[in-house]
Image (cartoon, rainbow, N blue to C red; front, side, top):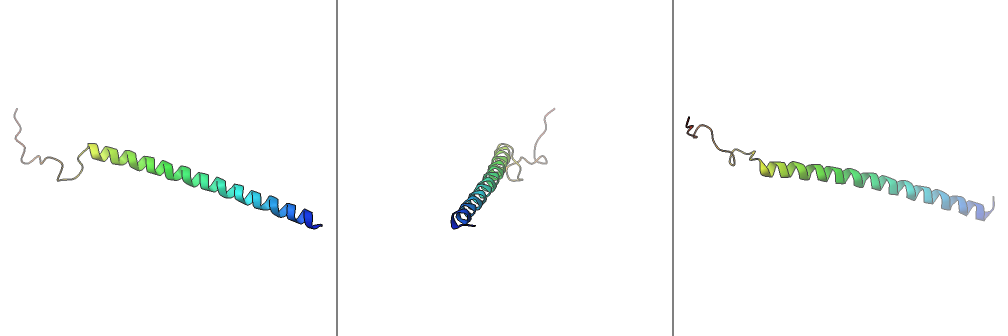
Length: 66
């Protein structure tokens, strides 16, 4: 094989590797965005609903008027 053919093959292999790496990065970024979006939705729900004992009212001290 001539030097040109060897260099061309190396170039093609390097391009394929770069393309594969870009696809993997894209998939990782999608998964990260999905996770961040899911976390943001969970946080917004927890901000609207009092989940801790401090924020929720205590039913033992509540006077029920029927």
